[in-house]
Image 1 (cartoon, rainbow, N blue to C red):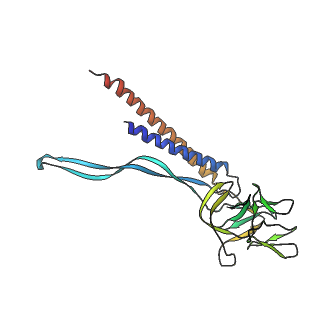
Image 2: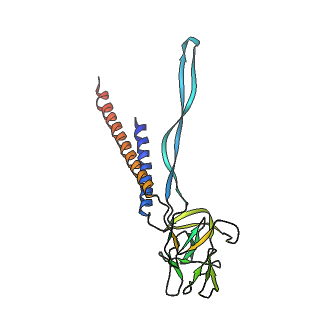
Image 3: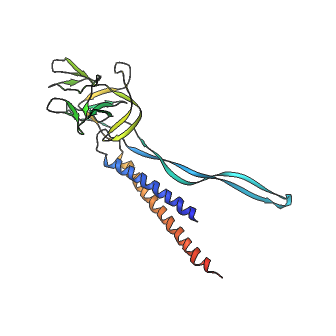
Length: 253
């Protein structure tokens, strides 16, 4: 009897994690460069199920394994979906987007992190900085300065109004990326060779939108809420059965 209560409670906890994750995705549906999350679950406390068939005529009992039953479920990890969001043209010279896989390197307070959010602006010293205050880094690890009427080509070369090369913006691939918030990631970074044949390029005057599908997330949110309600009713039923078992059956003489 108690097993049903515990199993239902574990299901409710899993639903709460799913609802929190989906809520965060929906809250960032308009955040440039945001990558949606999805919780992954795993079962534990598995037990084997056996079929017992008495055969009195043969003076034996047949025991056969028919499968396993899981008694609990827990959150294994929250996975990030790295599919590319829609590229929106803004025609702002300092906005850049990555078409293909890869990340920009940004720095704040001496810490280097990686992002897909290319919504950069220039500060008083013409340095490219994003909305969270992180500065864009070039291939030498220096802060990129964007010249007046400058341009950025598909390989990340920053040129002034006369066509002179002033900096190069590298694109990095990440091994074991880990989300740290504010559309930022950590991981083992390696520079992508933009001169080699690949599908990666930088687009000036574009930003990458969030890859959250609002309609799909809302449907999943409704499903999670309905499952949570159904599971809570299961606990109520078990509680009523326990009450009858204790107060009625236990009172029999």
